[in-house]
Length: 243
Image 1 (cartoon, rainbow, N blue to C red):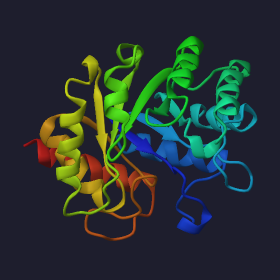
Image 2: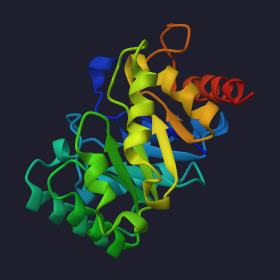
Image 3: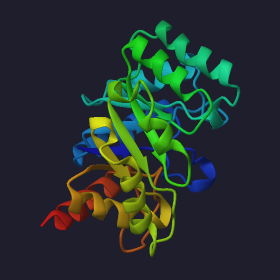
Image 4: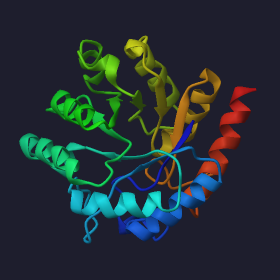
């Protein structure tokens, strides 16, 4: 599986290639799936470009994307989208109002309220991507979580953005995760670390992701023109690393 991460927290300042509106997200998702992506991760945005967990925003984004692709579509529950823990939990529970909730949602295990958010998602029938970031206490917290065995997968997120050290940071994170409570691991990096970590995922046979959330440039440093271009390059890099 190669997941495409369409936009992340990036906004209009990152350039016109980053999709923000439901129609732009749907078009970008369709192109990325045609290029080989088998899963979609998206940050739905308010009209002013802010990440949100509101069903009034998430619903139209999901509807638009699902009208164009037939692969799982997931969203974020990051604390930056709703800093108050109780309000964030209420937002997630309100997804029960949606005609069809997301297929999965990422929950950052180092954030306050992660267990409650994950439990609410499971109750809704939404798969949980357990986000375990390097440089945080996410790994030990996940190791003792009673919900660890019920998550869809572990999203091993390498926050080291240095091209020279990101692979070492990724290996250290995987060591901390150990067997990850028997759950599949999706390994990915960001910015300068995105391509080295993707190649490591290929060598280790782990699933991975790529897209404009994680990097704005291709492996040769040239600006990426679309998520589809990143997915196509990512698949080539991943397959070459597997050989």
